[in-house]
Image (cartoon, rainbow, N blue to C red; front, side, top):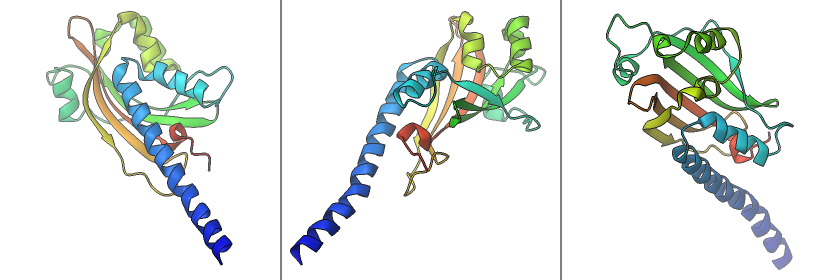
Amino acid sequence: MRPAFALAAVAGFAPVAAQRGQRAELRTLDADLRAHDSATLVLDRWCDRLHLAKPPKVVADRVTGADKPAPPAARAALKADPQTVISYRRVRLRCGSSILSEADNWYVPTRLTPEMNRTLETSDAAFGRVVAPLGFHRHALSRVRLPLPRPIHPNSPVLENRAVLELADGTPISFVIETYQGTLLGATR
């Protein structure tokens, strides 16, 4: 009986150990995102770390037909009066075939260059890559570590961040809501 008990204990330990490891990965991901201005560049590194694609580069798959007017929180964060035009872009940030995050992005096109606006309207380039020449910095508004389901699936939401991207002079250019997926914690099913 003792060997059977020992096997049951070991079998029960595996999911607990995996869950602890995933919680540790979530803390690491959260800290990494808080420490950097570009979520896209952070995700490039995580893509490489997890060996999700060669080359490890994040692509933004645009979700079309899902236009959303800027909510009051976005207008306030962007310091936009009612007449200011705000554009909306929803994307799934992907590395290889793995979705790493989904993002709702409201931005002020008049605060970007015409070429940046053209690229955002016509390509799957990630917003952070497109506006990188502006030297933006990220101002976090909130972050929420979501309850981890058991088991964690690749498309399980695990972390939500809200942030404003600002120019060096403090001018806000973008308000984002980002939802990071279980893929980043090593979920494969």
